[in-house]
Length: 293
Image (tube, rainbow, N blue to C red):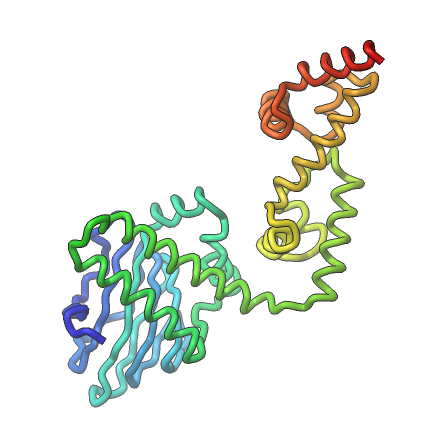
């Protein structure tokens, strides 16, 4: 690895950047760092060393390929058993504000952190191939951060998002190994449930509690099967039922209320986006066609 990517170790336990910071450390004479916590998320990608990480009262001996996630407020510190082998690792910090901004883009950015916090599982191990992939993404990000190429800031943003999404996808797939028959049966069961409860709350939280399955698993299952989100699937179902209803004697107001739209404005926007005309224009057009026949 390029030596110019190395960062001199600092015991600083606060962020300077409002979003993220990334460091590559290779220490043989590490200063003692007492047990501490911080107000940001810390990822440590362990490469080499005779080191144990203590998180709360539990100790975790580290091996090459381990990825540690330390949430805000969690006491931890590293125990260095000897200095003969360098303590080599990447350290990646994400502020809570930046994490919230990522969640606004997509809840997928939060899977790994939320799973680790809820299950109190702060360390995952990666095989050589998957860890090499992570390492290449970290090096690419560091090179962009330390370079002065054209589009530097835009490329850094892409690299950060790619790294975080990769971590979340890896964590999700680790926790949800593919089981085709069970997945297919669950997918069909949820589709049937949506059909028979179309007028009710069909949020991911509701479906997750109904079927005792992670909402992330449900979301990915629909995306994999249909190529669209489960929200888009439900909206299309509701719009189709509304379209059929307003062709008959049901008023537009009765239709959107009967099939799960919370208010007219959201129904109007969804209908016009799907069919290219407003619900009123559609209903009037249907009456004109009936009159002509």
